[in-house]
Length: 173
Ligand SMILES: Cc1cc2nc3c(=O)[nH]c(=O)nc-3n(C[C@H](O)[C@H](O)[C@H](O)COP(=O)(O)O)c2cc1C
Image (tube, rainbow, N blue to C red; front, top):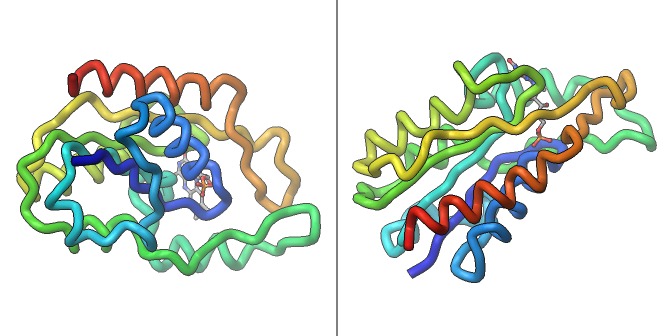
């Protein structure tokens, strides 16, 4: 039995948060992208934590990925990754799952309100999951980013993610 921290991430911020959450949970958890986590394999999981960036106050869509990809990039700014399955599609592929689950997102604006995480827990509930903990939002900061849209996690967010992971492990023990 294992725990997945599954993520969708264009510039790596959500991926970094996912890895920190998995680290906080401990050895049983693995951070895995939507392209590497096969939804059908989720039936053997002990718990599921899923995360995505907030796009248009919800989960990314094909259209929001096109918007992101249209941003001009130069050698100082990473191009967004837009070739991985959307979290919204990944969730739809999940089998019925009666396991604890929760969600997180990365966002410019806080606090957690309408966003990707709330959309994820709705999908998880539709699959039969029960809520392990309230979803969590992690903040990115545009102030240090150039005009080419390279986001940066705010200071302290990775520590917050690790601490949340430890909290989730406590709830699961
Ligand atoms: C098309 C698009 C729409 C976005 N919409 C929102 C939004 O509604 N609210 C918000 O707080 N951040 C918004 N953002 C900022 C993203 O949340 C930010 O790019 C993301 O957290 C970075 O994570 P990633 O590196 O894992 O992709 C948007 C970004 C893009 C590219």
